[in-house]
Amino acid sequence: MERILVFRSGALGDFLLTLPIIAALRKDHSPCSITLVTRSAYGDLLLESGIVEEIRDIESAEWAGMFADHPSLPLKMGDWLASFSKMFIWMTDADRRFSRNLRKCSCAKIDLKNPIVNPAGNHATEQLAGMLPQEDGFVFHPHQPASPAALAMHFGSGSKSKNWPVAHWKSFLKILAASHPNLPLFIISGEADAPERSALLSTMESLPNPLTVAENWSLGRLGRQLSECVAYVGHDTGVSHLAALCSVPGLWLFGPTDPFVWAPRRANVHPLQADLQILEPGDVWARVQLLLATPTSRR
Image 1 (spheres, rainbow, N blue to C red):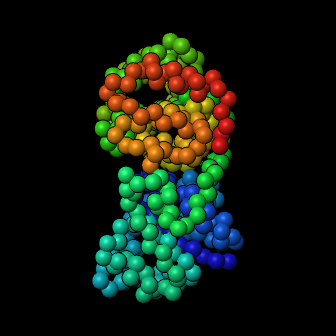
Image 2: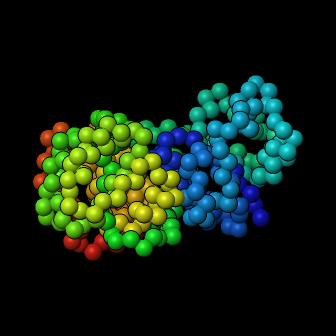
Image 3: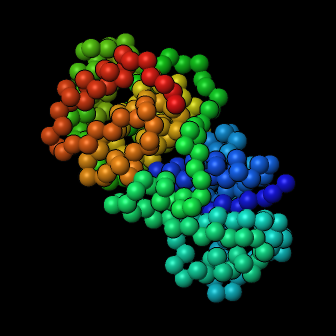
């Protein structure tokens, strides 16, 4: 069986944009075994989905020697690297030191890809793929919990300029609660979203809706819950990409970033680009109502 090693560093959204390429590698090289070197936090969902057989932590000390002028690796790791026939690398390696050191340890064919997406280019996954194929219909099918279908929301992002203002979210939540007081809500919050979570806490606690808050959940747990949701609302973020890969119909609020480049090309992902400072909560709610009322394909 062919053994393939993939390196992918980067933030969650950039990482998830690479998964349709990895899924296509699996299909094109079947049967094969894929090991992914990435952030350990990304591991549980990928192992559960079966897209890879093994995860290695890219931030662990075992890789430090590969960034030195002369690689210094334990013999066991050198033998392990030598067992792969192909390697695909999406990470910054400007001086080619990392890939050069890999070649000293392995005879594998190495494909060094550009990990940086041009925000004025074509779609991000196409840029990351280059000449590699993509599995456009790739989705996660995590084991689903038995829970009521909820509306999922993510209030933050890694950049304040991409966020819909907290005041608008407050108004949106009040409109939602008045119209659908029994609709369960699934609120997603990470470390970068602490200011938004704090500012919206009192509003969330005052809602009549059943409420679940996912605060710093693992990707596996988050994916399992998202797969049960009836719809999703959020910004251009990694969490939004995860929702799309779990086939959740979604409304994505785009401000300065370009949906042509960053929005998944899926029929059930609906990008809305606007000046977020003046985008009216009522307008957003009208679009969310359509998602809630319209039977939408999960693909």
